Amino acid sequence: MSSSMAARTLDQDGVVKLNGILSSDTASILRQQILERRNVALESIRSSVDKGDQNNNDKEDWRKYFADVLLKGNQDQGQRCDLLLPLANNPTLQTALYELLASPSSLLYKTL
Image 1 (tube, rainbow, N blue to C red):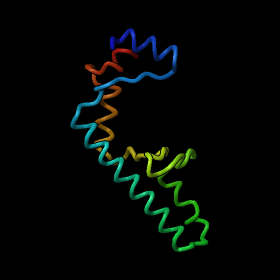
Image 2: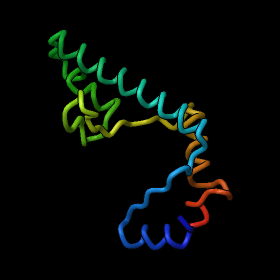
Image 3: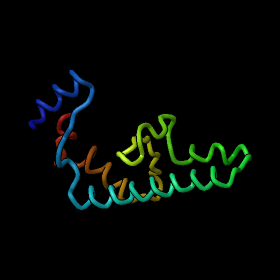
C-alpha cells in the first residue's frame, strides 16, 4: 500500500491495516511477550477468584492487566481483551513503537 493510499484510508475510515510494518523479529518477540502477559493476567484473576478473596483490592486485580473493555467473547476461541502493556522497562515494545512511528523507513511515518 502506498503512503498516499494509507493516508486516504486512515482519513476516511479512521483505521488502516499496514502489513509488515514491524520487522518479523520484533513482531514475533512482541507477540510472544503479549501472549505470556495475557496468560499471567488471566491466571492471576482465576487464582484470585478461586481463592474466594473478598478483599476489594483482589476484586480489582484485573485492572493491573486490562483496560475497561475486558475479556469479550469465548476464551477458547480467541477471547478479545484490551491488555495493558507497560512501556517502561519494555525494550521490545519500545522497539515496536519506534518501528511503527519514528523509523524514517516506516510507511506510517511517511503517511503521517
